[in-house]
Length: 176
Image 1: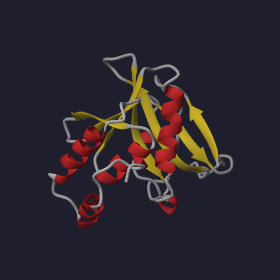
Image 2 (image 1 turned 180 degrees about the vertical axis):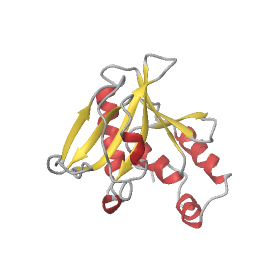
Image 3 (image 1 turned 135 degrees about the vertical axis):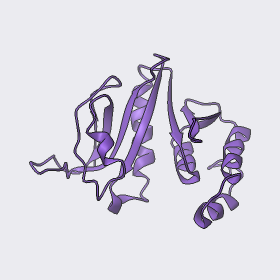
């Protein structure tokens, strides 16, 4: 699998992903974000870029030029569960930290929260207006902040799978 950065935090090329195989596919045709992708093979001449197995869009914060944001993370449906999204976020954020002081991402479920924590992000204590938890890299390795994020999810209406997932967690990955 090959990693590629397309554009930068001020913009990048359009990527056409098959909307039946990728969540947020329509967000990747926009050119106002850079993109990071994992590819298998080279792009073909078809309607969609079949070489992409995972993608993340990123841009510079509109109010803080020292902060970049990871926006939309998507993994091809048949490759979900392999950790590709978290690895891609870790790779892209590592590259962005060469130019920015911090990289942030907002997550809306405990599975993404845990995966991004493993990729080096930590809970800032902040939420977005639509109740996503804001994670940041770099962060202080703080068990209390990790637990505070889990507790925010515990206070929500969750699916059985999400509740079961949270039931077994109180310590950060690697400390259990």
